Image (cartoon, rainbow over all chains, first blue to last red; front, side, top):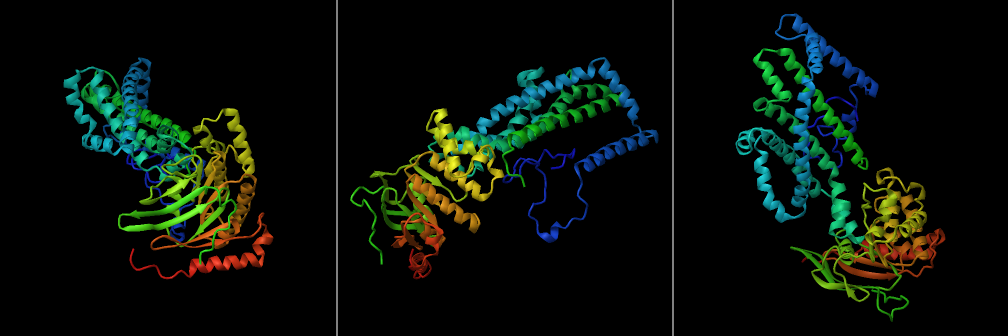
Length: 290
Length: 266
């Protein structure tokens, strides 16, 4: 399990079998011997880390060179200076707090609502038939596209933004929880039943833990989508937040500020994903990883 | 060909009675009409080719499936759903992968609301019995196939069932481990008697373990022959290598592998 910085988050909503956590296209472990012949030497952890770092440094150098070569770009030094400035006057801190608050509230509410609904859909065919059309319908709409509706309905303060994030997180999570319940090994449920477990015990001691890997993947997808949504929502309608700050800076051709916020958005998104990844690993250590 | 059963205590009510049990799935008859009785503390094995309905029969007794005709009785009461008095050991172990070995064994005791101290005592006892004491706090993924199956056996025993239903429990382990598990199972059974119905497709295993071997045939699933195994317990390696064992084994073998062509109609 490499610690590559590019852990995929999106597109992993339908994990197969037990090899969920890393998502993405991982070659099957049991590939044919002929195919398994290594073209490239395997990397050690440290080796990969060194290369990750080198790549980052190289990227910054190229950026610097391009800026010096006359492209209309701020230099890394100018961006760093602006970052120090925005940190010193509290703007960056304030915007980060505003954006994170929206995301975390909406994301938390979305997940809390999604898990029971997903379980209901997975467990009771009637509930599935009633709920699924709505989930499928709203899934095709980018959450951001609902911002105009929520603004009209809930006004221009925090509520419409949180509503939209709630929806983004809810949709990713509800499908994952549903998938988790549907893919539970029947034998495990039978094993619990013959050991005298009733419906509630089966739910609490089998269904929840068995679908936890799916839910965690759903949460990571949901968080990524929430983060993307909040920034975009702030670009459209907000008085504070990282997205809003970029929008305001755009008016003054203030590229360094835009860069600072873009970098902050990237770092925060990565950080949140890493935290969830660690939680996921902790909660699913029991899985046989391939 | 069916040998009359020479089980002790035949005058009392059978522990398990299967009366005309059949099971149809849409256009497929998994089980024709099966009659079978097990006395208390008897160890009966079922052998037969795939598709003979042996697993279906076991699931019906476990209460996990309903028969489409006839009835299965335990202590004279019709089976309608699973109950802790009928422990099941599945071929694929079916351990809860998120629980440690200890917590797996404890599962049935928790659902039965056994007090904590008593739970601990019983879990320790059964872990000791199957030799997993040192692995109590390990997760199933760290165990070998044989150890997983021992854990599953301990889990079933800990719930203290009167009946054990075992569905090809040693099918997935290597030959050597299998022999060890067989000996261990018999040792456990002789210490704490239970009525055991054990499904296998290994003829040696069927003869080695059982008081009686039930040979089933497919298309539709039915009982072909019942063969008494009057070999003494404990079944040692000596028994396994004896001419009597070989003779019985050959008899079961031919009953299994020289079954006539299945009837044309299903």
